[in-house]
Amino acid sequence: MSSCIRSVVTGVGDYLPARVVTNDDLAKVVDTSDAWIVERTGIHQRREAGDGETTSDLATRAADRALAHAGRTPADVDLIIVGTTTPDLTFPAVATQVQRKLGCPVGIAFDVQAVCSGFVYALATADNFVVRGQSKCCLVIGAETMTRLMDWTDRTTCVLFGDGAGAVVLEPRPGEGTTADRGILGVALRADGTKQDLLYVDGGPSTTGTTGKLRMQGNQVFRNAVVNISEAVVASARAAGVALEEVDWFIPHQANQRILEGVARRLGIDERRVISTVAEHANTSAASIPLALAQGVADGRIKPGQLLLIEAMGGGLTWGAAVLRL
Ligand code: COA
Image (cartoon, rainbow, N blue to C red; front, side, top):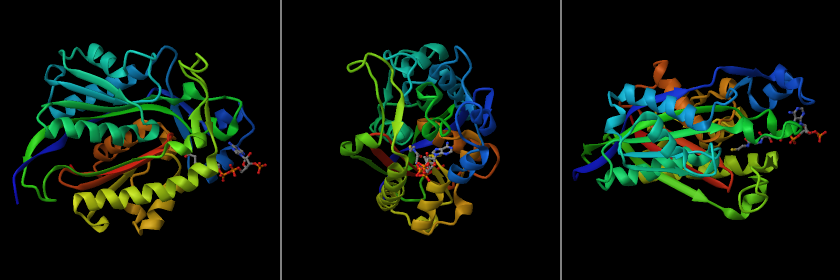
């Protein structure tokens, strides 16, 4: 086996805004019930960013914690990539705002727009910078204020989403070129722009000049999600050279408990190896995977050296998966 450079996750961090919104709270706003939401989605509550609290605020807090966990400081960071679909402003990127708020030196900073797949896309992008020697210390962040994109008269969407942020620090480490290496071992990214109408926001700078609201054909998204995610999971494992049975933890995008279960059933994955935070966080889009990762690390389930598989699907449609050893 030949030696190589691997991008290794050396720290994780998360941040959830303080305000908890329960299903009963939403039942006062739209014609819904706790029982319907729990049965169809597994969601019990979500967090909502406070007045004046922005995506870059959430991202900065999560990044700060990830740096502390990695034993790094803002001065070490040379690359920041934020997966987000809810930037504070149309521009500049959330990543440059995080850079400013943390006090990182001049480096590379930009956002990745792949909606709920944003973290998988951002991590895959960062991996390419790291293995080519273009970054020694990278922050990869998923951060969202999805509640700000909701149509609060549409019960089919507004009950599903929440706000939050998660971050990882990625650093180069020498590897042997084997699946025993720490780091990102395999990636599969996909997009199909013909399915735009299934999940999109009906506004933007070059159309309406407004931010717009999220629109979704939920049952169509559901069907596409199980099939597409399953394919990407298999492809990422093949790219990594590992069997699904070797994976210690599956960390899915947290859209709906029934999607998590549908993918696990289709691939024969034991649900006890799936990290689920959807009950407490709801769908935080690009933030959901790093949030679930940070939670699994914090509660001691996910341990250094274990093999992880992350996967997601989102608007675009975009989807993807990645295999990494922590
Ligand atoms: N409360 C009560 N009833 C609701 C409701 C709510 N919040 N939302 C929808 N309903 C109703 C619908 O109006 C419909 O009523 P009708 O039969 O009288 O027309 C009924 O429930 C069934 O709607 P349907 O959309 O077929 O339900 P579903 O079983 O597909 O569940 C979702 C809806 C949204 C939960 C489900 O489709 C889903 O999770 N899809 C994936 C969404 C997702 O994760 N998107 C993000 C991907 S990144």
